[in-house]
Length: 98
Length: 181
Length: 102
Image 1 (spheres, each protein chain N blue to C red):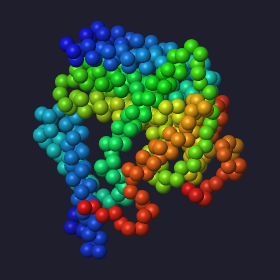
Image 2: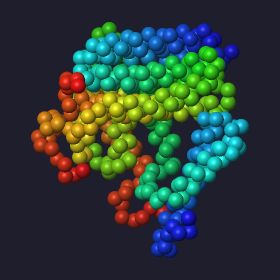
Image 3: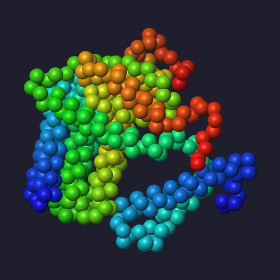
């Protein structure tokens, strides 16, 4: 019962971070700032959801699997943010679509 | 196969390093299978075959450069990253949801003296997790960052992180060879 | 409880749709590349929630694969031409490029 409640609180907090990420994506003025919003806020949101789901997991293997998902997304997020930022820096903000 | 590749006695460290790596590969492969397929699947013939093949491959392949990360420093680093990542998320979420949109984006330069390779790569990756910073570009040792708030004390935070990462790695430029106790 | 998970998944779907406005409108090409990231993180979360709501633990494996492929997608977006960087690349601090200390 307490685990369920904690799960709900964690996941709802995570939803706030996802909403903030999308708000930043729509409101921030330039590409780099949007990258900040998308990477950091969404990663924390996913982390909270993963924490919440861990409380409901069936066994230790499931817990580690959820953790693995989160670590992979964390690594992907930072790498992708850096690469998009570098691409924007080297090729300019408006490169022609081919 | 292993006999034909036995290194000459002048490099006893190399054989030991390879055995050590094979042990870690064995543990890692078995652990991954356990995570993905569950406990009961660990004794199936296919699982055993995969784990044994992975271990054999790590024995047959030439040893790479050892990662100079100190195992003792890993938990502290991970805790620091997690904390920084959470604070970064909170910071950017607060700014994105604030109706006044309190951001003052700017580019900042930072000269790092971490050695190239894993330390510098890790540094650049973690910068993107810190509150309000995003690594954009690396030229030589000069980092270009994008910061959300140009009035924040970015340099101190970066120097702090850099010192932490430097303490976690053995310096490859040191002259004496690394010994495993 | 599973109703709660489904509602959260639906909410995340709505945030993806809103984020797609930015991807569609751009204006820069970097904004369009954000799509990979958006679908990566939010898509993985939706899959995790659906996996527990529907009792399909295989969906968690799908999420794992998504997480692995998110990096590949980002690399594919960024390195789409595979060319060396153009001559007019701006340099931040020093006036000329220093390549010797690499």
